[in-house]
Length: 350
Image 1 (tube, rainbow, N blue to C red):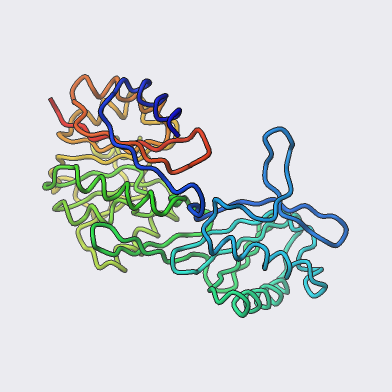
Image 2 (image 1 turned 90 degrees about the vertical axis):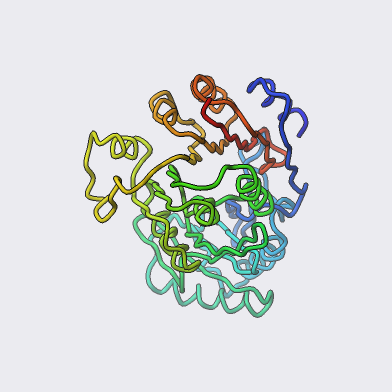
């Protein structure tokens, strides 16, 4: 971990920062596994460093409930009763929450028929009887999605003594390291300046939006993914929060809307003139913000920037530091044993 921290701090040219370390194992809440077929038996695989793939039995990085599930699931799938169920099974995606509920997505290279649901319900029952966990099961093939019950999990996070509820949809982005995610949210809440209205771009399912709502008068949260916007709507209702307004807009569209260079039907019912934005929160993809977005952010008194790529963060900060100074910065090791590093930066206008 020290090497990637040193690399990031040198890249950002900073010496004063906080570091939040992850557990070395039992930390990851989701996994994608390949399926290797040998006769009528299957094995799990992962991408290898030198090899195209390597067969595995389990992975210590995963949450304990996933680790307990994988061998049981494999034994069931390899039983004679499920021979046709695993036919042309290509890969498996698994997502878990902290309440021992798991979402399994089985992906096939054959067209799935409604009859698949009968075996999927048997699998759900068998897993529950053996492990005592609740399972949501989904089957996917080209153009087909079959769902046994629900295609999402409800997760709860505890931040600063409060419990918040979220909807994690199958296939949508969620933070993979639950413990570090809670530390990230807590760090932001402890270091930002409160009050006024907040603009949030790239809000996802509301990971930061929901806790931030207690620190600002109103929030306008934007996100291009329809699935994520629906998850945020669910979270607002579940947490009984009424001061969050949300719209399905990309980063570029959000800028166009607020600069009043383009009107959007997706903003129907939201009067942008009623907002008095003093702060902006951004959590962009690995490609960062870019010049246009950074120039837009310069108008805000406070910028909270969560980054998953120190290199593009450094490029964006070169622009933002023309008008803002860094007040707080932290590194969060969401991905132990990899070169990836999450960063949090809070800037204030000079």
